[in-house]
Image 1 (cartoon, rainbow, N blue to C red):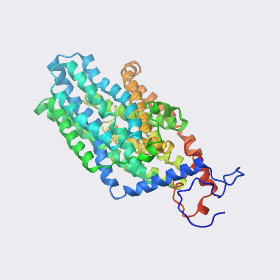
Image 2 (image 1 turned 120 degrees about the vertical axis):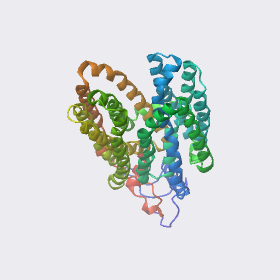
Image 3 (image 1 turned 135 degrees about the horizontal axis):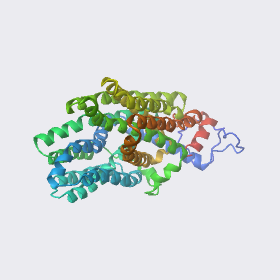
Length: 472
């Protein structure tokens, strides 16, 4: 047994230490040494960004919010666009849906590319291209030109969410990453509340073109902030070992742990969109509510989402640190169960009082956001060297699932009624939450296992086991 103290960047010579259970050699092999060295480098890199990590978090979080903000602020412009271009209802619907499909496809590209080459230059390049595509939309003089520009706009915007998640995973260690992911979502939640009313005001006082011009200005500001204030966070030494695989986000679906968190992510996002879209449609029909009342009825969702994002992020870190990596999903499981209950009650609440659906909107926002941080952070822990690809996998999955559910919802609401449709969706959400119990019960990995021991005697059998199984 080697007694002297030495750094834990182990040499590839055979070094005697405790063997893992069942091993007779008592030797740490080369693969174990490489994995240990990788984790040690990660800890050293976290220290590099310790001073600036919250500045980086704020800038990249504001950058990620451009995607939902640009979609929400554009919605009030559709009526004026239809009148100006004489477009059909089908063309107007396709103007929105084709952007979602384009974003889903190109998420397959940005994740692997940013994991292999660069975080900084992918995100700044996307913002640079987005500036001109947003401005080009304002110049459109035919509905089909607007189609083309919306597709090209979706290409760079689709990369923001996945690259930002990769940057956060580079700068925040696992025991603090859930809280950071929760904070990252706050600007998006504020955007969901205020973007559509702002778009309505711009369209009313100016024109629909003012909405995309404002987005172009915001993209310019964020491009400059990322260019000058956000450093390169990717571990280039580790990235050189990766092979570029654009299908990696799809292959990740076949990892059983990631597939389980995909089910949770899709369930929580579906619950959010089911209620957010139903509220402005149902209130005017049931209570003859004005657009002002409809706008303020969404405010509780935003408040609940802000509180849930902070609480969910903190709880996921605490449960993971104290009880193991799989326990990070406990707040997510509770949140998804609450989502299922809320969706069911929401469907039956409109005939009671206007305050019931408004209150349930607040609970829905809290439940959805308390689930989110644990889902994203745990999925990254499963494949830490492919953080952006993992988020591309999650994003692709929930974009397609929401597209499908919303596409069929009108048919089923007409067929069986809003109340029964929401009940079926709520039951489905609960079913989607159940597989996560497998991870919660059986994944007991210690997220602090990759500390930097000062002596080889500190390497125990559990640590060696976790290093070997970390990639599985």
